[in-house]
Length: 512
Image 1 (cartoon, rainbow, N blue to C red):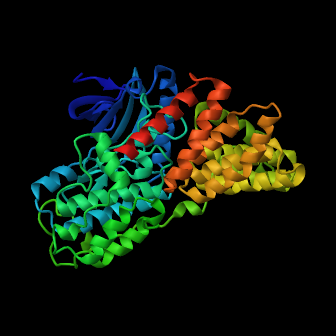
Image 2 (tube, helix red, strand yellow):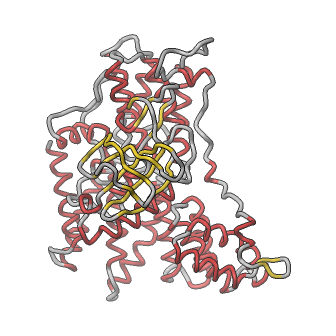
Image 3 (cartoon, rainbow, N blue to C red):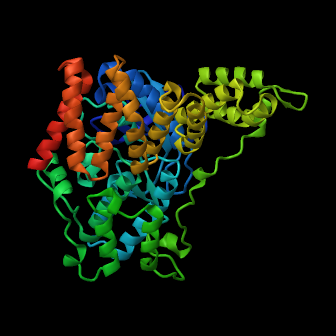
C-alpha cells in the first residue's frame, strides 16, 4: 500500500502502528508540504455490515467535536473522512517516544517524572472533559513524550466512536478499551464519564510508580474481574520513598465507585502540584517530562459553561434586512448548511438569529419555538451538550406549562435533557430525569402505545446504576427489562440479545 494517496492529497509512506481495527501510517501532505500521521480504520471490522454507514457518520461527527478542543497536550487533527472502505484521520506527526517505551527505558521511573507526566495529563483531561469528551482509552501507548519533555495524548474521540452507548456498534458487545486500564463501570458496559478517564490515569500513574499495572492476569476476563473486585496494592509497599500523599491520591483515583474518585482533573492536578519538581536553572536531559514545569501550566478552565458569542460574519450571511437579520433567510441558510453537513455554522446562525426573532415575533411565538427547538437539536448533533441542556430545559418548562407534564413534546424535551446530562457525566441528575419521565411512557405502553421509549429509558437507567456502583439495582433493572422485552419482542430481537449478552458478561465478571 506504500504510495497510496488518500483523499487525493495524503500519500502514505510507512506503517508505524497496527491493530485489529486499523493502521497508523506516516504520510505526506502533498498540498501543504508537511509530514502527517494517518490513521485508517475499517468499519467492517468494528461493526456489523448494517452499521457501517452509521459508523462513518458518527466518525466524522466525533472528529468535528474533537476539533473543538485546542490544547498543547493534544495531537492536532487536520482532516477526517472516508476513502473507499476506510475511514481516515489525518493528524499532526508527533516526534518522540510513547510513554510505554519511555517507561521501559527508565526503570525504575523517577517518581518526580511520574508526577510530571500525570500533571500534564490532568491539564489535557481538564480541557477534554470541558467539551465534554471522554477519552475512554487512556494508556501509555496513547501518550507520547516529545523531545521538549511535554506529553501529547493521541486517539482522542476514536474510542468513543468505536464504543458508543447510543449505537453499540461492536460485533461482540464487549467493552472497547484496554482491559489493564479499564474502569469498572466501563468493563460492566455502563455509562462512562470524566471519572472513567481519571481511573485510567490512576492505573497509568500506578504503573509509572511501581513498574506494573495494578491489575494483571493471563486473560482479559481475569483482568476485568480484578478491576471490579480486588483492591490495588499501595505503591509504597513496593517503593517506600514515594510520598504518602501520592500513594493516597493513586488509591482514590482507583476507587471502584466513580463517585469516590476525585471530582475532576483539576482536583487531581491540585493534589499533584505540591509534589512537582522545584524550578531549576537548566532543563533536564532529553525527553525529561519535568522540563515543562520550569514554567508550569494548569488545566484550562471549563470554558464550555459560557456559550461563545455568535460570529457576526456568519449571522450576517443570513441576508440582513433594514439593519437586522432576516429570520426567514436565516432559516433557509440553516437548512442549506445542515444539508451540507455544516452543523457548526448552522449552530452559530441559529444562536445569532434567536434574539432577533424573539424581538420581532415575541418570545412565545411559534416561530421562536421552532427556532429554539432546531437550535437545541443542532447543538446536540454537534456534540455541544452543555449548551443544549438549558435550551431543552426551557423548552420543556414552557411546553409543560401549556400542555401538562404528560405531553409528548414536553416528555421528548426532558428525555433529550437527560441524554445531555448522561453525556456530560452528570449521572445522578440523568438518573433522576429518566426516573421522572419513565412513568409517563410506561402508562402510554399500558394503554396500547409503543413500548420502545420506555424500554430505552430502562436500559439507560440500568447502565447508569452500574456506572455509579449500584450493581445490585443495575442488575435487577436489566434482568427485569430482559423479561419484558423478550415477552414483547421475542427472543431474537437485537435488544433482547444484547441484554442477555450483557447480563451473561456481568455474571462471568462476578464469578471470576
